[in-house]
Image (cartoon, rainbow, N blue to C red; front, top):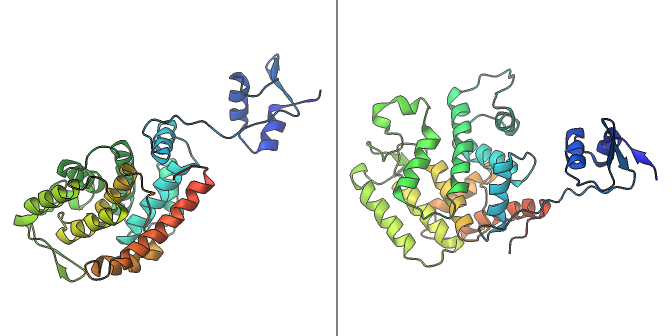
Length: 297
């Protein structure tokens, strides 16, 4: 039998040499043996990239996200979700960071070199959003509460220039009236009661459907409980609640932004606008699940 080196095997399967050595050491490449400090690998040895992830939550996607998060795995569904969800949600709210810059920050925890001025808040809110996604993955099966929603807001806005303003009230409900898209929102004095009513009504539903989650999102955005950051918090809640209820989650891309806004605006008249937009986004995420071989029925 002919034997090949670690370098040859790595090139053959397009994987790092370090990974090959680890697999040899752990016995995952059958027939490999050491001669001195050199691994000899059978030429016909097979390498399987498929990893058997443990079933813990009963939700294969959530199990995979938790596992890859714990492994700090790059190139998987967790990595892709972190970058795509953060980039698009922040972009909808005006961030100027590109998808590549967002990926670079996630991968290296640095901003890299740029020939353009970069807003410091864009960088802070990007790193904050990464932590917020970790939070909703860990809390996916927990009951949605006011304190959880406030913590999400704190995670998103902490350390930003807004957080240094006394009136901004980061991690707490707004102190000043605001509007969105020219429309009035809930008055600060009424936010607490309206949020309690929203959560009460939502938890009366024994099993939440996609439409129920979107209705919650619409009511949340109409209340607009925080001074800023409501859209990002709201979209994170939708992702979490899809995971909690066995529904394929979705990421509203920057390209779908105008359809998404129209859907929110017209929700009480024509629910199909927002439903169709989110179903389109859901189909895009389903393609990712298919690519990463995650069964989600």
